[in-house]
Amino acid sequence: MIGSQHAHSAIVIGGGSTGAAVAHDLALRGFSVTLVERGEIASGTTGRNHCMLHSGGRYCVKDREAGMECIEENTILRRIMPDCMELNGGLFVALNDSDLDYLPLLAEGCQSCGIPYHELTGEQAHRLEPHLSPLTRAAIWVPDGVFEPMRLCMSFLATAKANGATVSPYTQVEELLLEGRQVTGVRAWDRSADRLHDLHAEIVVNASGPWAGEIAAMAGIDVPVVPSPGVMVAMAGRFCQRVLNRCNAASDGDIVVPQRETSIIGTSSWTVDDPDYIDIPEDHVRLLLDRGSEMIPALRQASPRGIFTVARPLIGRKKQDEREFSRTFECFDHARDGVDGFVTISGGKTTTARAMAEKTVDVICRKLGLDVPCTTRETVLLSYRTYYAT
Image 1 (cartoon, rainbow, N blue to C red):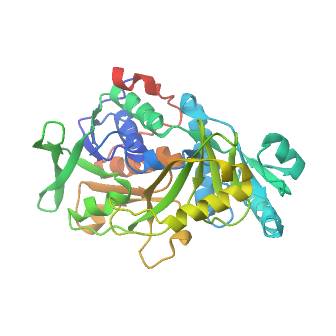
Image 2: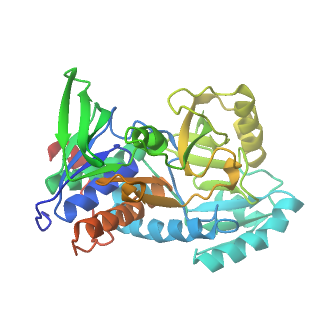
């Protein structure tokens, strides 16, 4: 599986889905790659999300670019990493008149974004999901799914390692190394050995999610990445077999995602300054339980198995309403900021990590004058089970 070799090197900061996908793409295109992650793989945003393989249905009405990105990547991930996915589909559930009014907007959005869908009566939806509220009047089926976050990252990284990449968890970037206005590497703290060491490369990729602003600031750069937390509540018991979304504009507590033997209710949204220190507001938890129970009344009798939060890396500025931020992604070549050898990729979803990586490595190849096509759309990933064996 070794890609064609070039005498070019890259350091990737961040071991979540985006960083893992970037390392995979770079290794396939022949780069010498080192990925550093301050904790365990997928221990940041990726490891504490909904675990939802998006069809794009949540975005196709108000954010069609993100909707089209999601369905394209949904289709690719089904093909290249099937052993990480539970391809169970999803329902957008209409409980009242407001939901029914939204239903044709959702259907039109799905159609315009190329998202497969079909409409169901309330009775048909109940046959699929017996725990749905008796108030269910209609639903729309879409090809949502569920993934296991750590396994997803390990599949990307197992394949990257097979192509020569080095993966270093528990390695925290303390500073960027600069020669003039050129980033030449990172000074990293090996937290296992408790020692500092320098790593050098032609390109450093900042794929640190909501921490991207902190990393960019080490080079004196301001990137428009806003940490936006969301609370999620994992309830003991699997009360649905498909991802359930409320058939209306995105709001707090409007998703229930089955994950193994739990049901994850999500999510709220606000902004913070520091993604490492996020309080969980009690009123958010109560709201999620109330709203989730509207779709699945049995959740009222269930017990929370875990309550957690994590910050999303949204592209935007603090003064904007975070619900209005696009869920698309952006790659920043910091040569335009006067700092070369340094690229940031942020925004997006775990579902779109592969596409984010493709765009990032395309930018890097253009910077280095390389004409090496991306092949991650067709490359079937190694099983996550091989991560520790490669």
